[in-house]
Length: 201
Image (tube, rainbow, N blue to C red; front, side, top):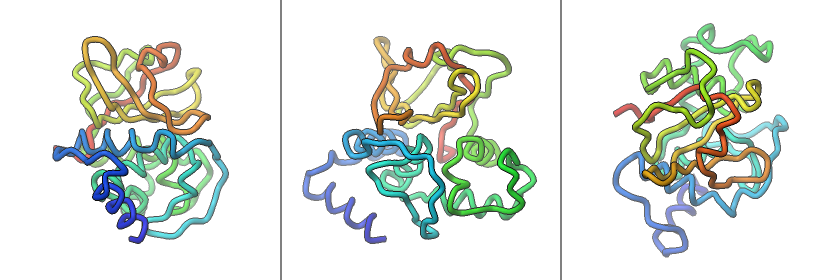
């Protein structure tokens, strides 16, 4: 609660750009605001508060970009939402890590779980049925849309579309150097997996 109030104060004082009125652009702006703030990457398991828990904002994993954007831009807590949905339907989530029950410290920070959550809540717009290039998401893409990949055809990754034009589609993500903005073309060697629009319109 304190963190959310603090961030709201930054918007009010002009230290961060004002958030747009529509959910997609709000999510996109909240993602962009992380660039230069989250400057590292740390995949280690940490115990965090629930709900509203977070690792230090200076670091995190790719999923933390989306979790923080949801909280800052929309007031939606993926930690709580994913945990509650896993309590209702744990069997519908991947069991890749040998888990026998939900864990609110880590579940929302795993791309495979987020994909399952958005699929279950009707937010999935497209899912690859083959080896699609990492920039080959069907149009249209819109600011705030969430994309997932398999880097090198193996490693789950996630980012948020922050701009889409005839010249370039831009994505904010963290694949090792902190939150950064990249062209979607950067992902062409990798595999496109999912396209989500959340919250569902």
